[in-house]
Length: 331
Ligand SMILES: NC(=O)c1ccc[n+]([C@@H]2O[C@H](COP(=O)([O-])OP(=O)(O)OC[C@H]3O[C@@H](n4cnc5c(N)ncnc54)[C@H](OP(=O)(O)O)[C@@H]3O)[C@@H](O)[C@H]2O)c1
Image (cartoon, rainbow, N blue to C red; front, side, top):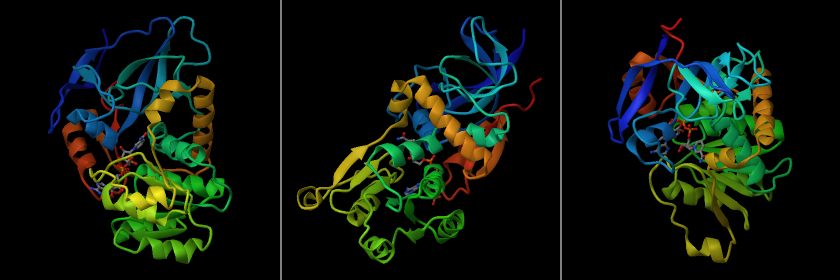
């Protein structure tokens, strides 16, 4: 019987009560794919899950991890459209594992030419960025978008996708080295948290004030973004990196008619038809293959070094994503 390694969470605590365990590898049942996982990132939401502070938690013990990419190792009876060797997005939780059984009906097949590490980071952050730009409010070419924590995976995707879609970005970060990086990436305007955002809007956007603000920090940073929006504009909150609530001044609602809303990709993944998801991920994968969309990698760790990888992922001022290499030490 073949075995593989999986990261198993036993208890919701900080620091994480998670261990790497050897498990038996099962063959796929009808309708399933067996994946040899290539890589999986550690995202802020994963760290929240380990602590038991997330919108949806697994029953424990559980193999955790919310995204990744893997190659088809075996195809269950009745499955069509997948072949051994295809690279796929599992679209299921439990990705921090070397072998994974997934229902074929929800898996997404990727183009053969895509980089495996970029593929492993495709299903959450770039998809969030594209949905935020396309579905929260109607934007036309030349419109400006405001965002904070803009050097995050989502923020970098927002900048790159805005270039493709014809929008302009005014990005806020909390350190100068990140600002320099984002200008090089194509950010139209990049400022620091302590800079005057209203002045930056005036100087860069003129009368074409931003209709959309993307907030993943909360607290003062969120209110600053709202201050920069056009009357009637929308601030969408999709993250809470600063762990402070969004306190909305009354005047923003009464006199400026600003809209405040939230976004959770999980809601879309659960509710959208498979064809819609296929289309979105084929579009994103295409941009990756063309070299127009990429996320930097701060470090790659074998699954056996999960504790080290978790420490690296929890560190601030990271230069990109921390990835788990799930292929190491397995035949
Ligand atoms: N709702 C959804 O569907 C959805 C989907 C995807 C992501 N998200 C959320 O979006 C956020 C970004 O995710 P990601 O994976 O793109 O992030 P990431 O690549 O891990 O980057 C984290 C970002 O947060 C900043 N940051 C960390 N601590 C902060 C603090 N205390 N105050 C202000 N900024 C802070 C970091 O700045 P430094 O580099 O300066 O440390 C960096 O810009 C997270 O909150 C995540 O949960 C939500």
